[in-house]
Length: 153
Image (tube, rainbow, N blue to C red; front, side, top):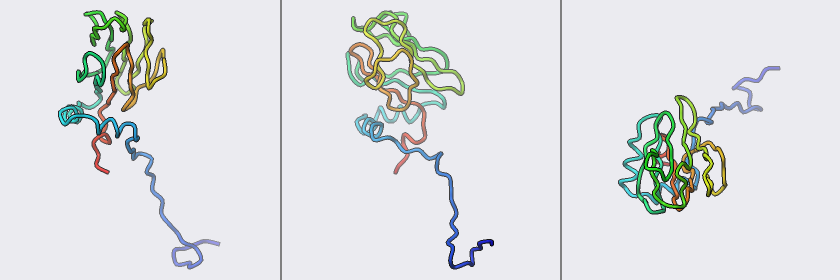
């Protein structure tokens, strides 16, 4: 027995796959709402494939660090790519790694006080939009170029 659209006993419907649509999590939406217009503008102009760490608390509040392909060293050493000048940060504290077509990954490199992502101490963790890094007294929020970041509901 076949079912046709003309068969009144069966309602045929179409399905569509919406798995590629992503909404911002409430956490990321709250962070976005707390940003200044200038910070939003900078994030909206991120080049494809790049990301940014935004310092939201600590001695360098408001600082922004662009992340590209390769490794970005974070620490108290002036030779670090991201120099966080505070005794709570190890000279060589963490590294953010990224290669073409892959995720951004943060790795603790033997720091004394640890590297925290979203409140959990970690040796290595993939970052996503809104991930919060705690390095010493600094709280940095990770943003990746994502069309959904500025989509209107």
